[in-house]
Image: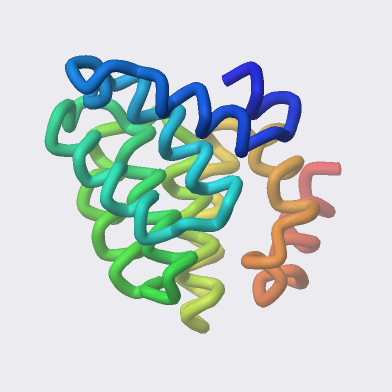
Amino acid sequence: MGWLELGNAHEAGEELGRISVAHRDHPDVLEVRWHVSAQTKQWQTCLEIAETMVRADPTEPEPWIQRSFALHELKRTGEALDQLAQVVHRFPAVWTIPYNLACYCAQLGRLDDGEAWFKQAWEIDASAARRAAMADPDLVPLKDRLSRLWKKVD
């Protein structure tokens, strides 16, 4: 993770290559592999890693989020939405799930649904949702609606 934090996915990948075969499917190793693959935009690999993590421990929210993100990056946004929407009820305190659902809906032109999902993310953690939304190109179709929401609370 240190190499990734320094922005060096190549060195992180080199370190991962030194991990013994017996430990390559450890959740922490898979997590780092996902981030290395994401940083290098290897979305199919990200998808495969996330699917492995979901199967290994479906009680963790992050692999579900990562799998849908990889699907979205692979231009399979409808699938990303469907997969993540199936588990939103399992993780009611995780704002990034309804936030990502808002992004996917916005990209699919489902603006009413996107606004509703964003409001749910906002209710969980308004500050984090707002910070993320400020620079997220996936939410551009909802920009006017989000601006109205922010004016109500400012």
